[in-house]
Amino acid sequence: MKLDLILQIGKKLKEIRTGRKITQEELADMAGISPSFLGMIERGERILSIMTLFRLCKALDVTSDALLESGFVHERKVRYSADAAEEDPVIARIANVLKNRPDKDKKLALKILKKMFRG
Image (cartoon, rainbow, N blue to C red; front, side, top):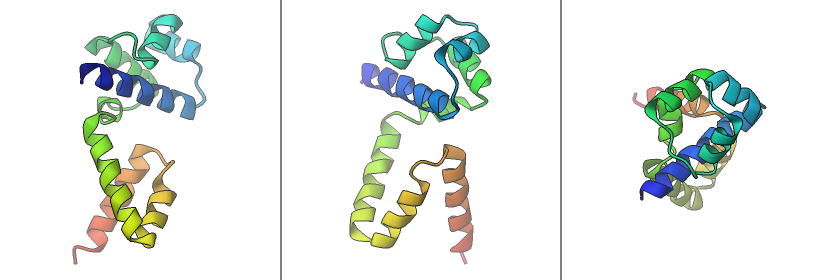
């Protein structure tokens, strides 16, 4: 379980970094760590300290939730939405629109939908 979480954090970190077109060298420099250490974190080979997590989040301008949400709770949410999408093609279309958007856009869309249908 611990190893899976470390792998998920590294995967999410790499996803955010590459999505912003930042190299490992650039992010490592911004966070004050070596590029090789960053590579090991992204591959789940090393456990990062809270201070390193803080510096990486600051360098990427994200909250720690953006990296930590990538664990088991996130996987469960994906499974539920995948089940719902199989049952309803409109939900599948909504999921496809949001699939590759940043987390903040997804959260905003959810907030809008909740407000819209509280009614």
